View 1 (cartoon, rainbow, N blue to C red):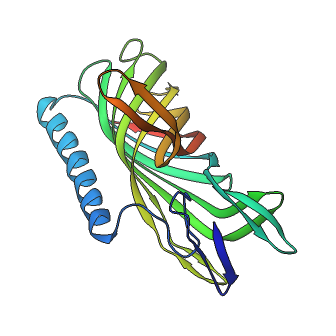
View 2 (tube, one colour):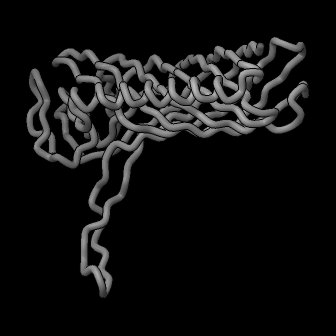
Amino acid sequence: MLDKISGEVRTTDDSCAWRWGQRPGIDKGDDQVIRRLTWMVAVGVLAGSAAWAQNARVELSGTAGWTFSDGVSGSAVIVPGVGTFDRIDPKDAFSWGARIGFLVSDNVEVGGLFSAQSTSLELGGTNTAKLGDETIYNYHGYFAYNFGEADAQVRPYVLGGLGATQFGTVKTNVGDIGGNTKFSTTWAAGVKLYPGKNVGLRLEGRWTPTYIKSDAGGWWCDPYWGCYVVGNAQYANQFELSGGITLRF
């Protein structure tokens, strides 16, 4: 439970999802390792795919859209004269991104994508209170399957990827909330429209869940392993609807 609200707010409940003043999770050293591994995987995928399919087309895309975001819940905190808060969420906001994809066959595509959402972090409960502005970054290597013929003007597709989500530093009136990077996946479905040979449009819906914490959900018992505590996982979710331009070579 948050026990101090003056200058800096701290929590004595380790089960809270994010702290005011510090967000739990990966420390600075692990954060750098995750970033390096993410880029190494992405570069390896792209380099390998380029070597495997020297004659395959390359697609470059830029997108813009709107991301619907949610965060996680925690122990209720009463702020006298303001309200009771038990959630912390990024606000829905504008987002943009870029990606590069290699068509290693007529239908199979591998690549890497980046996206960013300029948002703010809010407390929720009986009232809403803004903590400060924040930018959320996503870095993912992906695999996609494009339906239809390679030269079709309309190509639906599905996409899945692995990588990391970086929650940027939030500056507040009572101090900074340090940034943090977490492993995440991303899943999408969309359609590419090609009115011309090399220039097209992309419409996409994408979901990026990021694991934040687990709350104790109760006990599970079986005759072989005995009884143990099971948890309820909580994820910060990003649901993005976007459109953009695609160039293929």
